[in-house]
Structures are given as structure tokens and as C-alpha cells.
Image: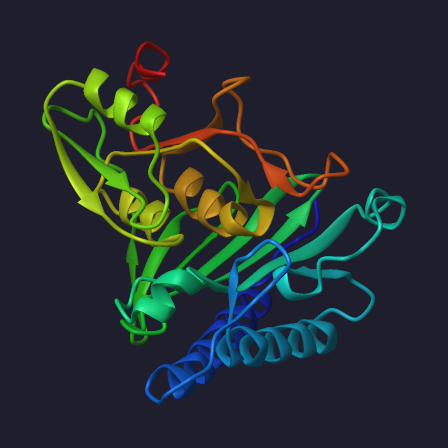
Length: 265
């Protein structure tokens, strides 16, 4: 497995913070919103963060491909031969950004042989950074202080369940109804994975399309903290760049992997 050095992790954290600062420059002013072909919103903040991260990663690891939401048109015939690459969402939660509710993040993940091996999630508004290396401890950094993360396990009722502000459907409502006593918390972007990783939330069910860059960094942090992000169809953790499509299937994120999630879905 590719070795993740302290210097590499720190350099990626610095890039995420730099991108977060560029996002906040746009956030604090008036900005225009355009829409991509799939009707998802796009702002100058998405593009500024994309440029900073991609240029920074290309200097940091020359020759290692970078797949970003804003440059995702890489043919499968090219991608399928990548043993390692960077997977980036420069601004995860653009809808939340447009609503100005603060619930968006910068996501950077290093994928090695299909597995998230380094994950960094940065909150531009709060300034916190959640980061982890596969098989090692996960941390939340406030300023320059790292706090080790651990999920809440065993998770006891009432379960604290993360729900997307922008994506709700009948199936999600039905699953929530089968969980028993719950406290529902509305939250956007990859911040949901991070809040589960630090024990503040227990479950995040998601039915409907997400993209691989939406989940990889958060999955790395969550797994390192003792939790799990599992595909509903297989019960196994997501693997990346294994199919032509970059769209994820349904998943459930758990702080306590022993929760009876199959009974709910």
C-alpha cells in the first residue's frame, strides 16, 4: 500500500484550508449561481477551490491523477488503469452554500486500490478539519490541536440520525420510522460522516444518487474512528473507481457497526 507520510497529510490539510479560505471569500459577498447539465448548482467558489486543490495536488504528487467533481470527464478506459489517484469534491454541499447555512465542506481523498486511504474534510465556515489515514486514528483539528475521534458504540436509544436537508424521499422516511426512538438532526454535506465519527450522531441513511467524491473522504474518517459506511445492496464498504459510473448506490453510515441496519432498510 502507498505509504502516507506525516508531511503528505499535512500538505493536504493545508490545501483543504486554502480552498476553504477561497470558498469563504465568495461566500461573504454576492455571487452568481449557474447550473450544470444535471441541474446541480455551480458557483465561483466551486471553481476557485477546484483550481487550488488540483494545482496543489499536481505539485505535491506529480504523475498521480486527480479526479475532481469539476473535472470528472475522464474516460473509463483511462480511469480503470489507475492504481492510485486523488478524489476531490472542492465544495461538497453547493446547495447548502447557496442557502448560506454553513453546512458545506471541502473533501479530499487518496484512493489506493479502490480504498480511501487518506481522507481530509474541511469546514470552511467552522474552520475544523477532520482527517484520517486508513488503519490509523482519526482526528478533528481545531486550530492546530488534534482531537482523537471515536464513534458512539454501543449506540443506545434514542439514536441520533443525520438527515440531509436537500435530499429526502419516502424510503428514507420509512427507514427512519423503523428505527424506533430517534433524534433527527438535519445537516448537509460530508459533515454528517464527521459528526458520526466524533460520536455526535449515530446513523446516516442515504437512498438516491450521490457521487464517489461525495463519500470517499468522509468514509475514510468514519472507518478510522470505528464506524462504517456500507452499501445497502452488499453490506460492504464502498470501493472506488471500480465501475464506469461514478454514481454511488444506496448506503448507510453507522457509528456502531453492530446496529441492526438490515432490519431498517
